[in-house]
Length: 135
Image (cartoon, rainbow, N blue to C red; front, side):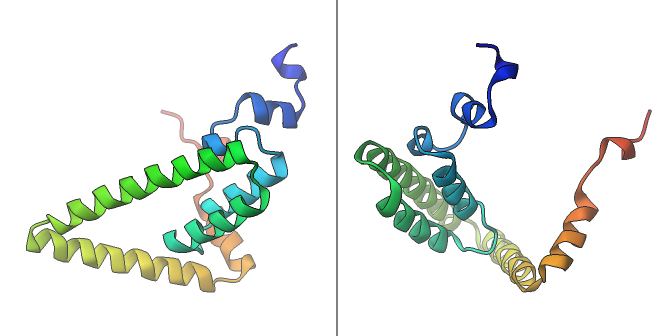
């Protein structure tokens, strides 16, 4: 079968690049997970809880095993990061905390925007081929 003759759903399965636990999941289940995991309006904890709810609801035993591995890896990465933060110098920790507050404030502003304003703001950062400068 030629690649250019694949349907969008077939392409999604052949070229899947997301978490392993979603490899065999339907397109609609993948979308629900990816929408949850990439939602900037959710905190990391909220994403994890919502993903667990989705997993219990939609994943088969094999997928659930892969999901548990995924969560374990993510938890380990977070623990390693938290350890690095604990080991920062006082000056670096102060700057880290300030940057973290700025990020949280940015997310709060984003959460409060109407869909129309979000679209306008997002449109500012979309780079179109026609706007590239020639050198």
